Amino acid sequence: MNLLRRNLLKLAAAILAVSACDRQDNGRRHSFNKPDKETSMQSKFIKHQGATLHYQIGGTETAPVIVLLHGGFGSIADFAPLLPRLQQHYRVITIDTRGHGRSALGTAALTYAQAADDVRQILRHEGVEKYSLFGFSDGGTTAYRLGAADKNIEKIITVGAEWHKKHLDGVRPMFETINFDFVKENLPEQLAAYQAANPEPDTAKWAAALKGMWLDEGASGYPNENIRQIQPPVLAIRGEADFLFAFDDWAALKTELPEVHLMNVPFAAHEAIKEQPEIVWAAVQAFGQK
Image 1 (tube, rainbow, N blue to C red):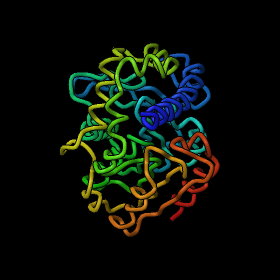
Image 2 (image 1 turned 90 degrees about the horizontal axis):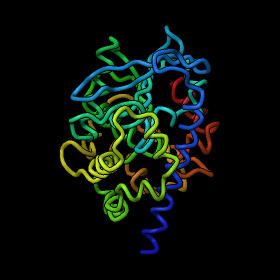
Image 3 (image 1 turned 30 degrees about the vertical axis):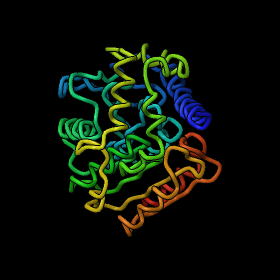
Image 4 (image 1 turned 45 degrees about the vertical axis):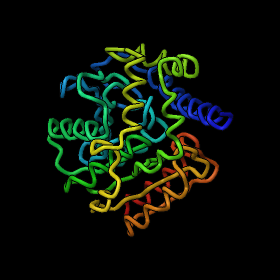
């Protein structure tokens, strides 16, 4: 029980770290329909599968497209430490996963399969044919699903992203405790940001939806051995102290994807993008030049 409590506190701390980025990003927004003056990102909305989804587009218009997919309980602000630099080299599309940020949860179940379908719909709407993916945590899991099924992806970068349901053996007790009370007691700042930004805030449904996605062992869940179908180059990044993404699970990617590039970031846990942005950015740059 003490170990479970420690892991829950670690989970809360990790989510709160993202919350700090959310507050910084939300604080400089002026309108849902105007570009962010500091990042020059244009907010857009699309309706799909019972939800109004929010995404942003910006960066260098003629550059290759990169799609940023954030983590659970987060938002597009997860990438705030890297966004200005990404904009210099890419046409950037950031997406609020359904139920997160300014995207409604809608009527469809929140699953990794649904998240991937939402990404496809947004890219079809924007006429994007070729693109790379940069996914953090849940966003990386979604990126793996997309990479295993779609042939128009150029490169995939993930940070702290699980790929197989077997990891649930170590975290299931922690995930099963996620509910309204957990969010209210441990994530008050994240809860406030969610309630302020989301068009249909319902904390109990939000927590239940995420728990359901994390514990999903069916075909709509983790990509599992299907990642062997991924053809584009992959860079899989992990913080050396990431308690949510075990070292062995990360290293096992080399067996499934022999050409994968693996990077274990020192002095970082689950939030490697926030904790060591310079190291992560150096890896992203080097990977982009290959």
